Image 1 (cartoon, helix red, strand yellow):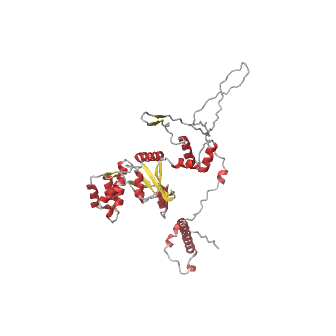
Image 2: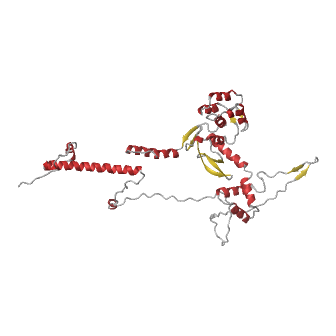
Length: 401
């Protein structure tokens, strides 16, 4: 009896059966047709299993679950080959650290036998920290003129109070930067010979801060005049036993902080004036008023007045009251919009933030001038997007990178 040989056809050779309905009775099929039908079924099952696997991975990704683990190839093949010579990186040696103070040379002599030859010096650097207290009593000359006036010699420059500037600088640094408490500061200063109480320390920290405030305002003015951009943000903060808001303005060049009781746009515009108190009406102000939908008759009333600069907060509300702005009950509030425009015009008149961009977290109070969303907050929106294809996921990864 001759042997029967059966050959399994390739998948592409039986694709014509994909649209053919299965026969009513499989027993009527000959062996070759039955094998072809089984091969077609096996191909469809494999394709369905692949689709189900991809859908499971997509569902797990949308739910935030862990996907299929990435299994790295075995390193057994690499272990059978001789290891490649590793590149020996040149070790970077640490250089000598020079002190930031002037070095005082002191020669140390030694007794040597006669006929010895001098071979120079061998340096040995020793650094010493000296913390000491010094008190100076200034004997100020006092004269009485023939007409009865008293003339008292002034104190040297930099002396303001019974504690010198170096001590005040040390107290401020230890309290704010070193996070030291008043009792610990008082104990330390007394241990080195200072006669000072906790109340006097508190006064050093809180009284006569005008010079520091003026220096901070100068830093803000210089930053707003020269920076191409500034980042701004605020956060809740306690100030004078009340809830307030600490606002930060800065970039890679400077940082400025201030804490106030409000986080409104009026408050932010007032900060950008950097200590100036004037209110100004010019083209920048009228552009602001039109942008924020103030009515044309009210803008015309402001433009018809000869006054364009107001010295302080008392003069500006009085001007609005004379024009009848305070009596209007409409939306938007004409007093608020007009004040914002005058503040923004004051900022521009002092050459602050003229061509710079303000980067923020898209909070409304920071939307002044050229405003942009910082990349940290912009990237958060990219991660919230739902992607369903490899192309979308690649685009999301490229933008977030």
